[in-house]
Amino acid sequence: MAVQTELLKAIPYFTGLNPEELDSIKELIFEKEVERGEVILLEDEPADALYFVTSGAVKVFKTSSDGKEQILSFILPGESFNDVPVFDSGTNIASAQAVGPVVLYGIRKNDLEVILKNHPKVSLNVSRVLSQQIRGLVSLVEDLSFRHVIARVAKILLEYASDGTGPKPRLTHQEMAAMAGTAREMIGRSLKSLEDEGAIRLHRHRIVITDKEALREIAET
Amino acid sequence: MADSPVIEREKCDGCGLCIDVCHCNILVLVDNVITVIEEKKCVSCNRWCAQCEMICPTGAITIPFDVVIEER
Image (cartoon, rainbow over all chains, first blue to last red; front, side, top):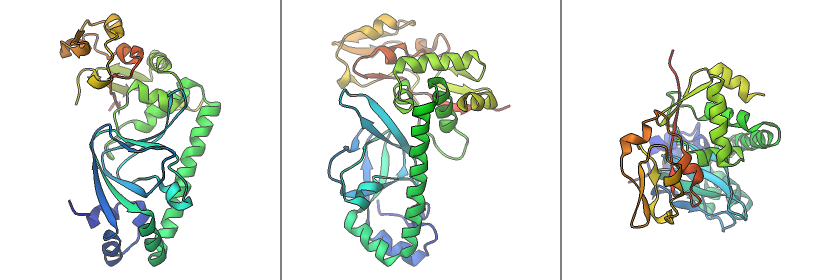
């Protein structure tokens, strides 16, 4: 399918651009369809492009030498990944895998340089996007350094609760463990504790947040 | 939407640990690969215990949860 201007408009990199500018940028963007579970990027491999998710969700993660996974973030529609190596000419800083069927828009490094030269607004937008990514990573460092596992799990649940604004990925214990930087077993225990405290209820394939305020208080401890 | 554990057949090494921990007795080995025999029974306790996912050494079984906020 051809790259759509409407989808480009929803990407923060291209906020504030007029239709003519979007049309000229569209020429430099390619579409890529990815199947569930497919690895899109491997950490430490050479980087050739940055990607925007236009539908589905992508997991961005690091893997330790003994195979443990630390999820850095889930990338949702409109958001980008692999920005850093495209700007600093280094290798991929993390791996990326499709959570379900995913459609991506990609820009190759050389084409991005052309866009930045011709459209100064994009540079300002990129600064904002990268600043937000730094905030997210600082928040992750804070969580891993200072929060107890139960508080981390509570924070993850609040972050991934569907609030009607768009699709959120479904989470497995494995993924929650990788996000919280803990073992899978700890997730089961943490969910049980949160249920005992009345903050959530486990019901079939749902984790139902029954007391959002209580969960928020636990997340902030 | 899945209503039972999601099994990635190629990752399963047929160790059978998940069968041992399953409270609902819905897992069996077929051709040395784990298989769900009765999807509905998985939620007989009305909650996915996720013991099979937790014990699986190869990550072949996952139990994906939606996180939702209860409407009042």
